[in-house]
Image 1 (cartoon, helix red, strand yellow):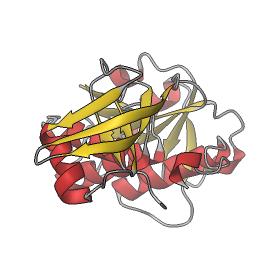
Image 2 (cartoon, one colour):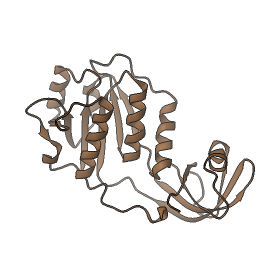
Image 3 (cartoon, helix red, strand yellow):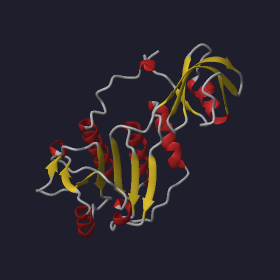
Image 4 (cartoon, one colour):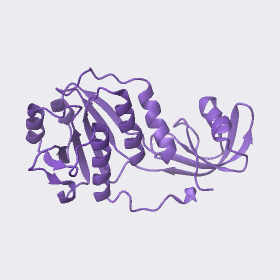
Length: 245
């Protein structure tokens, strides 16, 4: 089997015995993914716990799996926080959250930028996007998601290496940054960061970086910057989990 399907369950689920899957997750497993009795199956709760099991029973609206292994993965290792000016297009926000979660972005901090054209408002779909992305990859932790009235308040509690993606001749390559163990990346909205926001970023110690010779849309800039930082964090060095094989 080349891929292990994961499903989202409550954190109160026992570590041993059986898992009973019902409701929307059961429907997805039975009707959409079409898992079969005897197949391996995975479960996550978004708070560090992961279960591996084997399907032992399927009915019209219920799936039962025998738990074979339980793991708790602490929130450790290198971290990446994205500070993003709120965008005009819902599709761009969805792209950033979906693929950013799949990649392993630790935190999404959206702020009301001077060039943002509408107020920050998170829809009920946002958590569903993050949950689905975690299920796709088997990621154990849901990312942190926050909204702020401006860049100043978004950066207030951040401690680590702060970068600001800019289109300026003095900006340096992300490859030149040495300490990325806890890294934050500021990305402006459509229209980019204002001069005042760039000044605020510098006051918080932000280093101006570029993302190569081309100018990209905000969502691609965020994801490309995330990949470049994670590559330096050696996030992609480990092989796939053995349960994927």
